[in-house]
Image (cartoon, rainbow, N blue to C red; front, side, top):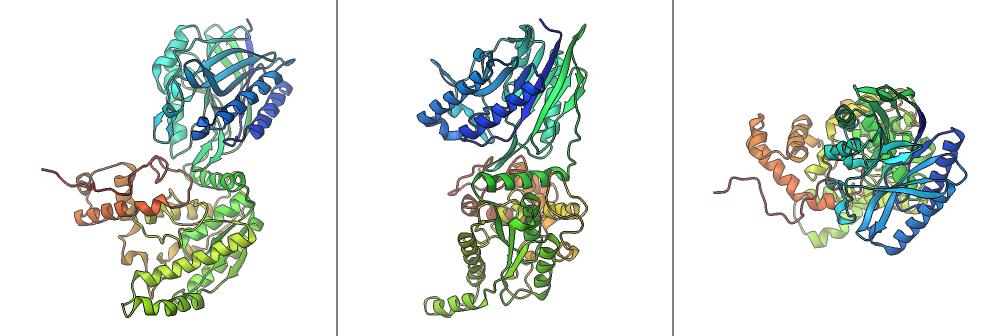
Length: 555
């Protein structure tokens, strides 16, 4: 039995389904652990398959290839002094499991099975996996080590059992996505477990964007007594090595690095940038294109894109019509110049007017309405998709959560695009992020410093500019009011009565509820975007399109 351990945590960015690429990342991490003279190397949850592989787990060939990749990684531990803690899939007579393989000297020495399977919010592991029994500690280098897997630590019984069976250290691999305040939620959870069980826990999380989820890393170690002993980087890969020593009252960390967590303003920006970067790159694109209207949403998306890829990989296009103001033309160009991106102007006046002329015999003498406005938006979508197709950049769409909640967007028009960085961002949050970005260049972002979003864009009244003198507030309540109602109705699932009791006008709340319900068909066809809040449209909120329920008193 040893009295000292050096433990390495590989906080990496796997890609779901990329068994070859993930295996290469794992082998490099093993080489790094050997170079660091680590005793133990731990990878994050379901590392080889990527988290979460969804219905790939129903594909027999995928399963066999994943088992083969695990065998190769286990074999790579031969002639090393590193014990590998490898989270991956495992199959036995009871079924398929979310598991951890412990390997040493080229052989499997133990298998741990996840007991508590999440089955709500964004993960539905019971669809794929069979839960395991309460696990026993694994002896590593003579030390009894407990390995609860992600959701297991949310249930006190799992860690209690490991401690009662003699575990002296807990190693916890995770696939825990980011949303606001999530880093502090994890800390409070681990603080509770270490206080109850009186043993330290090393919490490893993956990093990177995967479709609508963003994993923020931020791995950490904590000892009993609310003692944070190391803190990994947030929204970046990291290789975390900590030294541990057995003392009279248990194991303590004698060497660990603590990185600062991002502020509450920086974290959502970093999440959007990371989600955007990984979605584009992991799907085989190298650059992006977007419509730059002179409004706040497209300006913020352009800044995020520059932070993600650099200005040379971002192409902005202004698409003016007769109602586009000179101020918008000026502001769009000003923003593009500040960001250093390619900027083109493609007028849509002639094609829109020609379409209206050709439609006149069909539409008759009916007065103008949303139809004409939508034609403008859809013509912009046609042009942007043409540029995307011809030049190969992924088209970004720029609608915010407030607009998407109430259907203030044109399907097959401004909703066109492969990804939407603002999908889970309320309008007032967009303004706050813009003001913050003008005074900060966060983390590994590639954009310029200074006021990259012109103050005039932040100050002016938002408008789609689809008719003369139009503003958003012609048909919507002020955004602070709308955002508060959406937060209560969508994110908190409050009833109409509860929202009215907060001081809002009942007819307004009922109108917003109706708009939210009838816009579900649009949201179902919208581009994916990063989940920033606990309740995002799409992943995490599954409402039927055909829905007869309304929040009214029955009886």
